[in-house]
Image 1 (cartoon, rainbow, N blue to C red):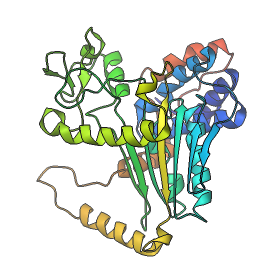
Image 2 (cartoon, helix red, strand yellow):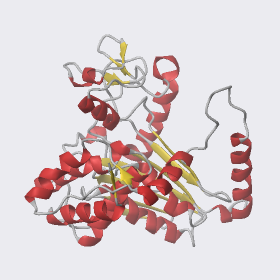
Image 3 (spheres, helix red, strand yellow):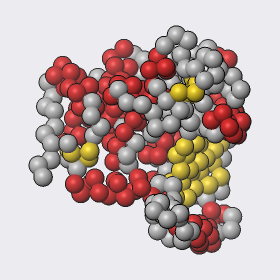
Image 4 (cartoon, rainbow, N blue to C red):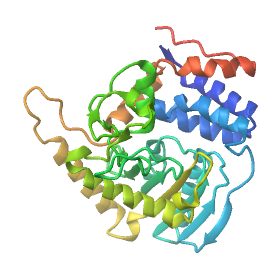
Length: 350
């Protein structure tokens, strides 16, 4: 089933407003979630809407207020997000950082106590379209589902890193977790009764498994670091990097023992014009892209593609033909639509 983006927006905005968000914030959150679905990140798109609505109703996600400025030094600033909606906070911080690059070639920011920020891939293009570079990472200081390399007990969260680089065409967009997979993907597979594509989990005895049910037993299986049991020390090291940039640099993390579901965020906007020049930056990244795409693949294998290439192509296709939602997403939203008197969208007629 495919649905018009506009219909999904109207439903999502209406539900978020019904749960207490202002219209502008509801639009920001809804658009960020739908952007994730458009790019194929179905675990972090509208699949999150029922959870966000539940958090708004319970007060876990703040309905109003502003972030508290902890420090501001022009080229860097740090906020306490007060558990406001993550997409609202991240977009607000990115907008401020972009504006400050007129004076500062590099602007860095941290946000402690943001609520969940959604899919990181939904953010970089607004920065690359302005000839700038974005680095973005986050950690959930309450979540501990990834095991340190060599261990079998969870110690930290999947800790994704995203980045966006302008080229002479489509930007290069990176969004990867520092773990073998993400919590949302495991939950999605468990709900649908499917196995994981690979044995990305390990049980309490250190055995690997592709069964998502193992994630929900006691003691639960843990997610392996990126690189699995082979080169997972590399993923563990990168996970520590994210911990340092988000929780430690932001001044609130695991040692604070938070009760709320939330995120610690680090972002940095870089202006290439202040370094080797924007034209050369685009030239170099375009040259790298072209060389990579020209690399021959093994016989019968798909060609090399750049990070973000499939997501941008999928978004263009779905804007034309409708957004294809993963099964189970709209049934989970339907009770909220009934509760607040909103109509569910009709599928696109082919």
